[in-house]
Length: 71
Image 1 (cartoon, helix red, strand yellow):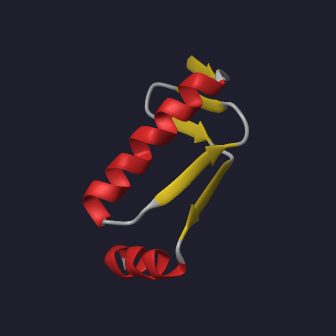
Image 2 (cartoon, rainbow, N blue to C red):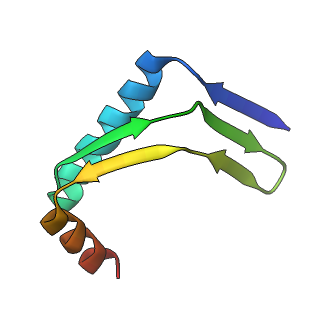
């Protein structure tokens, strides 16, 4: 079993920035992402589990557009 815990505020902010950039490029929505707890990942032979406690802030219109694209 492999485990990874990302606790560093610097790394969590870097990951959030990358995700925000991808959302902006792919969907055109401006977001603000905050990881509240450490990012925890566990991998077994055939499964991976990721635990996230995330706040995502965006305009209501962007959320509606995102949901329409996903559904």
